[in-house]
Image (cartoon, rainbow, N blue to C red; front, side, top):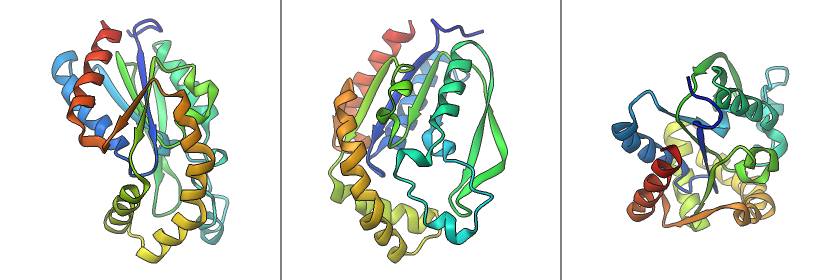
Length: 212
């Protein structure tokens, strides 16, 4: 069983499509070879978007998903505390098509290392208290926009017009208001996106040190 002292929690934040998921998956895959496949878990902040099943689809679409109020950080903090205490949790599953939580959840068991990734992780002081180290992906916004358009159109079934409208209405303004300022709370700032191999190797070494 993993106790509070053994569970290492790493937070990776940054703009939407800045490379957070890519670098988190790469680190997880690499460390599984060293620490064991059952010793690492990745949790995505998106899973903690609030349930909107009581709202119409028209209302759900209007939600500002780039504002901290759209996320249930309190539940995420509860889950992190439970995992650090050696308890399993049921992480919500979120549908990008229906814009609400799915009925099914995913069980996450205590691990030696937990990697968190999400745009607003560093905006919440209660979340930051759970992290042994925090990372900010410092990727230029124009690169993030190109990646976001491709991802949302190809993987999430959205139109280019809707992606661009949302970017202008909420994504960029909320980045400037909340995400960019949260960079000051990061222990490590990673430039050039999720394929920065030097940064990946450095982060893996640091996580191994924390987990030892």
